[in-house]
Amino acid sequence: RRCSSIVGPAESTTRLWRLLEPTWGPAREVRANQPLMVTESLSADVTPDPLVRRVRKDETEVLMPACVAMFTEEVGISPLAGDGGLLYQARVAELIGAGRSFARIDDGKVVFKAEIG
Image (cartoon, rainbow, N blue to C red):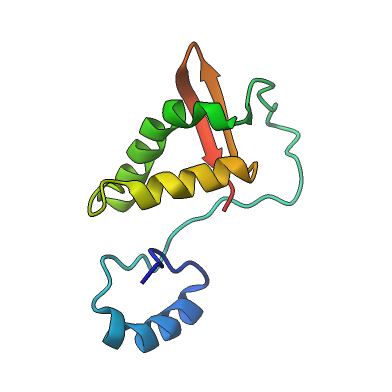
């Protein structure tokens, strides 16, 4: 299988998982309450950081350690497990290539990052 996560309203994803579990096996983890950040308008209380920008393809190696650390902290396992991180690295590269990876990089260090998707 190529799916690593199912995200959506708990009721819908739970029904979907009941159909998939007999074939896919037990879930690694179920998060019935997983907060997501959403905004529909700019907040007057938050000043955007002008140094946050789209990550360039040539910055993939700079961004990867931050991506791995964040994934490991959020999910509890390293995305490098299994295939040595080949699929995860491809996913990060895909997000960068699509212009959906943003970061503030100061002197070669990632001080903030966010991906859309």
